[in-house]
Length: 428
Image (cartoon, rainbow, N blue to C red; front, side):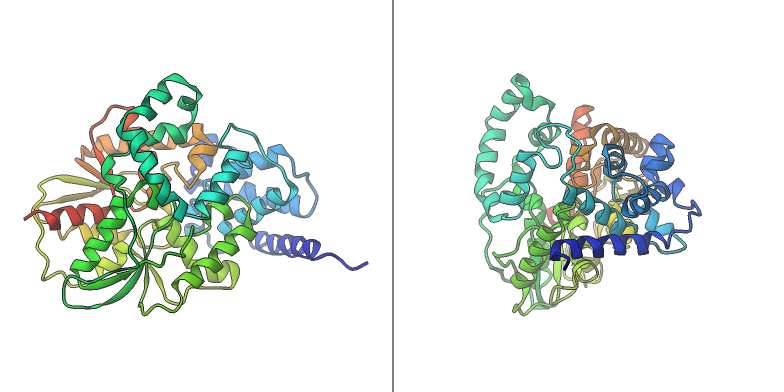
């Protein structure tokens, strides 16, 4: 009997998982760096323990049950373990493969209306995140809900108040939600240095257009023509980390098509989570964007700023390093480099930057208890710095941390470094 293509794909997935899992020598050097092991001190919530569980399920020595799924779902995919692994085990790939196995089996652990495999979650990921042009049309409605106070009123009076996603929205400022229509090209406002494209993402283009507009402004002022292809879509990270590998590949192919044929030297991203996904298209799917992808901070750090004048900012700025920027892209240092262009600024690292803030894509929705504990650690770290601003380079981290700041009644703005640069450039 000839195996079906689906069976062949499953067998290939299991073989890949077992081969990579066998590379783990169980040395345990990863354990002190794992945020969830730090919280539970359970072997099953450590990278070493999870790899053992994956191997057991893939080889059918142990069942794929809700307990297994719980330990896989508790993983933040921060990949801190990868950065210290002497065997260079591709843990990020392993956890994605494990979640793909779970998804193919149709298992889920219900945790509310926006949990994995819920109808609402699947609708949002399929019809909004995968088709982000629709998000642009929804933004005016979100402006109305927030600006009128209607969303806050609804949260006080119905079950939405228990949903972490909706709880976060009132803390957004109207500055982040302009009625923006994206142009295909934004011309340089100085002597032309080159041409780049900007990856918008899905979440940022909905609720953080200030960062995207600031990026365009800064690049234009530096002499770069910025292209924004209107057929670009979600990077696919949310789908991939939920085990929807086929959809993630489809989105990757759509983005590759969108950015092909442009006269550009790089694709710039402002969210490090998206950046990792774009960068790893080749290793994950065997396809890649036509030009290199680069984080905006790293790109700006290499530029000549001699013609740009900044207004002084005599304030202390704490830098949060997203896991994706620190552990995977290896570009956290550029956060500090670009901010130093602002006169009189005091830039300090947020204590505990080696540990995840708990946002981790949709983790703060799926595992709110763990996510809140990890975020509270960041709140304590910020209080140690007494900083006036907190900057981070990932929209998920910014939203999660800003929610924590608001809950505690603190007055500190959480924003992207490029936004701070743009503000000081605009001040005459």
